[in-house]
Length: 59
Image (tube, rainbow, N blue to C red; front, side):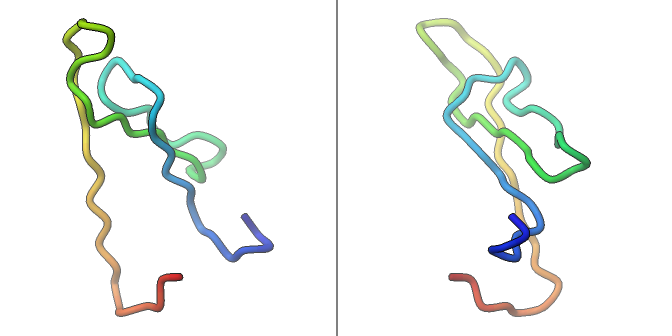
């Protein structure tokens, strides 16, 4: 992460009971899972909203 100047990684595609796993590794990695069903079982889905404080170049 340091070599790419990332502050945080948001990962997906891993089911999470509440739709997300809180940030791990000192707030650097978070998991979000948006589907409310997995293998036919109902669970909570989640989304993450990102608000940038100033316009930034995203590559």
